[in-house]
Image (cartoon, rainbow, N blue to C red):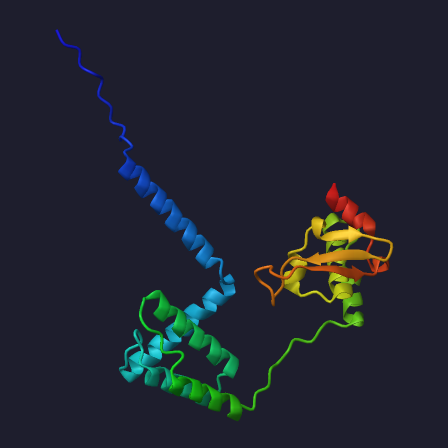
Length: 226
């Protein structure tokens, strides 16, 4: 009389299957970090730029991928003639480069004819760089006056408005602040800017940025700490 071993329907994990799972997880992690290499708004802009380039190539019966340097040069010239700003054209050229690199084909972005066309576009462009004007004290006062200080959200908003104004912080720098980035001293708050628009990887941590404590109530920060 023989005794049969119980059968199981559970898959047996072999070294091959374990290796396959590890590879899939590593690939997923790599994709997450690659996506985080640029802001989501930048990815959306690149996707839009690439679609515009594809539509133009289809209308001209030209290949978009891989694109010949002459094709890209003509596309940029056409866009410039339509009034597209040089800064936008630079971004579209970056999108074209990225799509070519992602497809593992040679990117034409560094070709001489493309660089010369872009140089000419910049020289002939009459559009200057439009910078956003900073909010002045009167505007900040009007915004602060509308805040309801009777609520936690109102106190938080007041603190953010005043801290951002006193420290001349960008919106991205302001929303990235946490309590660990603020230190109260006799002279004011010492603000640590961990990352900024010009340092998105946090390679240059800006410390010791002092803000006059008279414009910001320390009690607001104490409430947040609780």
